[in-house]
Length: 509
Image (cartoon, rainbow, N blue to C red; front, top):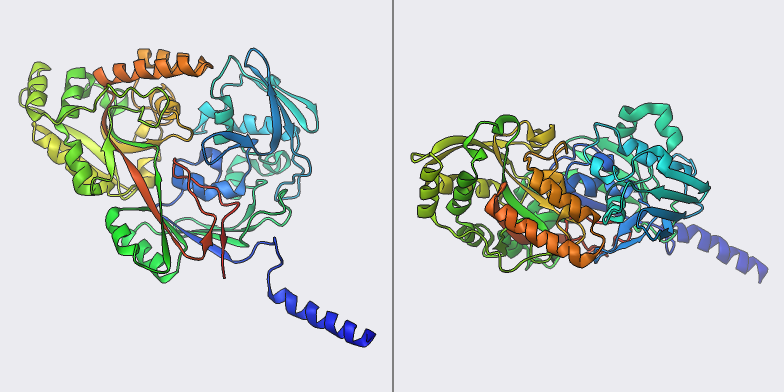
């Protein structure tokens, strides 16, 4: 009998390695990216594509939940002082970086120090803390952080940018080498990065959550051409494609091997104006001109023609799903006649010429959107010199320095408030800011300190009216978004800002 039992155990030991052990990651998940990430360190990721492609490498002290709420990450819990300035974080124990370094309270200061590097594109995530002295290590797993003033968004800023990086490795290799080969505590570790082609990661075997990740290998493929992405999802060459248009959905919805994922998107599309750089001295400095350009664009027609009506026009950067939205503030109507009258009143009865840039293929039908805006402005005598730029070139320099005085873009917000797109695009000195207005800056300062939610909502509404009358943008539209996955994908649900966490995403077979 003993011989039979031993023989059975030997056979079992030979067979079971052929199958994944329950709870262990298995299989490969392949995701198509519409544009090439400019970098793979998340604190410097320039757009949502880069954020999504790099997030699996890192963990933050706190994270966003599916509903936009702040949830524990590397910090299991935290306490906030009565004055709203001091946060005491109780950190998770037993966490290691991909290179074997231990994560503890001493690493938190490194997050802030790197975040405040002048070349960082997202200084606003860190500058609530004035100095390194405001980060106090209580013990190895308790750290106290004090902000310069009460900050209604400090935890949200942490969820966006405070991702753990290893102090020893960073000190050894320096910033440039670190950004080329980054190390985090995330569920995946970097295996290979070929810019313009793919990013390959594998499951981190010592991840602090033994139930994550679900897949052994994660591959992001850069496929800028929409037709090629569509073919890849239909053949199963990739498992997830994003930013589908309604024609894509119509083609895929009857495919038995594909699931369609639809979700509301907190992303405003707009035409931005500059009053800095090459915007100085242009007609855009006149508010009547900017009002005229808003009246010239047929938003309703654009949404109907290019998105089959699957969207809505907007009156500003605070949208219906955001705190402080004022439904009485209606989108600019399409009124070319009034637009011409305003141009004449501003001193441009015959119109004028102006440059406008477009991030080619960066968003669904964005090329056609840019052409539509060009045609509408041409109809009131504004001759738009439209330039299509690759996404890397479009976002490559601070303050959109490579674009014309006008440019088409969009901005998402992660948690049901419009503050980040307002602050990021309208605060002087910020990487993506191209419009300077001290009154707007004053509003943003008051919003940032308004810990009371009702007070903050009222300020948002006031600011929306101000920016409607004196617009720094042509406000266009928001959309519902569509993505597709192969049937074998499980647990995938993107967030309203188009990013996603892949910790719980798996593949069958």
